[in-house]
Image (cartoon, rainbow, N blue to C red; front, side, top):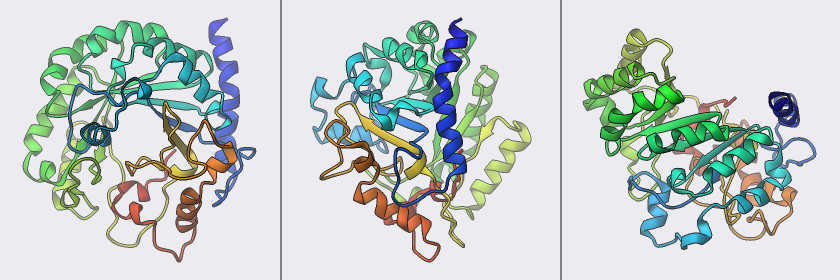
Length: 331
C-alpha cells in the first residue's frame, strides 16, 4: 500500500517532467505550462569543513549566516513545498553547508518522500556513518558523498561500512592542477571508492566561485592531461565515472537547461540564480515567500539570461562563459 501511494504521488511530478521534455523553452515562462523538475534546497549555512571554492564558506567568512534564521526546520520546508514552483519537482536536492547538521533532517526527508519526490542529499560524509541507518529509514532515495582532501581520511575509514547499509554515490571536483600533477593519487582514490562498494563517481569541473576564485584552474575541452586522465579511467573502470561537459573552446553550443529545469532557494526564501553562480536574485520578485510564483520564474535577471541562451546569434550570459555546464544538455 505504501509503495502504491508513493507512486501515485509521483504522477504529477512525472507529468510535469514530460511537459518539460515536450514543450519548448521560452524566455518568459508560465507555471501553468510546467515548473522546474529539480530543486536545490540550502538547508543550512553551517558546515564542518571550510573549502575555498564553496559559496557557503564565503557566506560564513563574510558573517552572513544569521544563525538559526538560515537553518531548516520541518515547518519551513513544508512552506517551501506549498509553493507551485516547488510542488512538482521530481528530484529534491538537499544541500548546505552540511545538511547532516540539521536536527529536523530525517523528518524533512520522510515528508518529501511521502509527497512523491525523489530525495538526494549531498554531504561531506564526516557524520554519515552515525546517520546512515536513520536516513535509510526516513526514505532517502540517493546519497552523494562529496570527496575532498580534507575529508578523505574519514571517508576511507567509513565508506565500506556505510555502503553495507545504503550504497552511496560519490563526487569530486576536478581542477586543472589535479589532473596535470596528481593523476596517480586520483587513480588510487577512485579505485578505493569503487572497491568499497560505491555506486558511481561523478566529476565536477571546477568553476571559479567561493572565497578565492581561480580561473586558471578551469578545465577546457582541449586540455591534454584531462583527455589522458579520462581515457585512463575508462580503460580501468569502465562506466563507473560520470563525466560532465568541459568548458568549450571552439564553437560554443548553448545547451544548458538550468534556468528552466532547476530552481533553488534557502530556507528564508532567497532565490538562487543558477548552480553556476553563488549570488541570489535581487530586488522585487526575488523571494519565494513574498512574490508571485510566475513573477519569480520571470524575474528580469532570469529572463535576460534565457534570452541570451535561446538566441543563436547572441553571446552567452557573462556568468556562463566560465561554466562548463553551458554545453551540458541536462536530463
